[in-house]
Image 1 (cartoon, one colour):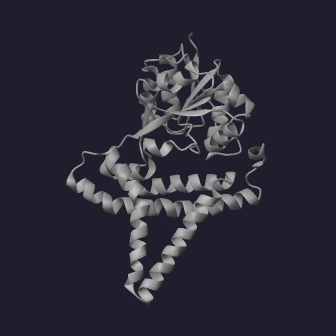
Image 2 (image 1 turned 60 degrees about the vertical axis):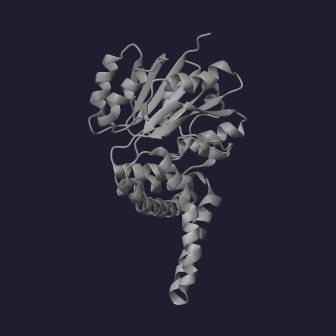
Image 3 (image 1 turned 90 degrees about the vertical axis):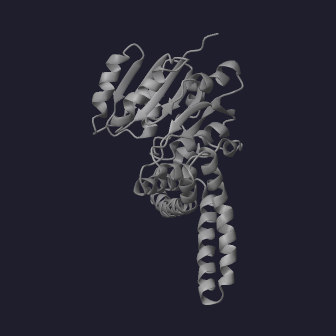
Length: 328
């Protein structure tokens, strides 16, 4: 039985990557039955490329320019327009392997008990810095097996009726919206599976400043949605204890540095493991550099989170974010 599929995406300022991204959608072994792209008001020439692609793939690609739309509004608009019962969502900037759509949607087509399928990401890196950052930001497959895992809507497929039941993505959130959507689906009893054969590649941020901004925004979104309070408290507590140990070590004895070193190594093991598994054939110099750059980037990410989260909470509780929908 053939089941039709709608692929939806939201983009903004993706001029450099848009052509390759759309081509990777239409080069799938399992072709989408329609592709809907919402542009949130690009200013870098993306719209011109999008119009050209619309003419090139005019039988299957439709696009809408909605200036000022956030990613939730864009996704909801695209899904509302979509004609078909299975929705595959992907973000601009990704590169899809040719079996991505087939593998992402097959569990939904073959098993009526499956409601949501998440894909798996591999890093797409252009230089050594991005390899180190990939170790900090892109998890391994075995890290995603936890039943508490909440998939990114960068690569996810679900039944349109499930989206309708939970009233779509939360349009009051511009960041972290897919996590709230996942939670609402799980709270309504929908069944999630991971298909690690549904592969797409994702490029890490190309600079420390852009990485800091990314993680600051993620944590700010956590604060807006009131998510992961325990996780953030653990981070604050850990760094507070680290500072206390350092002060004690400098005032009394360097023996206090021992628990700092042990704790730091244990904390960083996950990221080193990611690096050597993502990139198993690197040179000695690149591997050696990982021992210095990964701790630095981990620290940058943690600082960004610790600054972004309280700002998000503040904005939530002073009423800048209307979060009532999250409680439904």
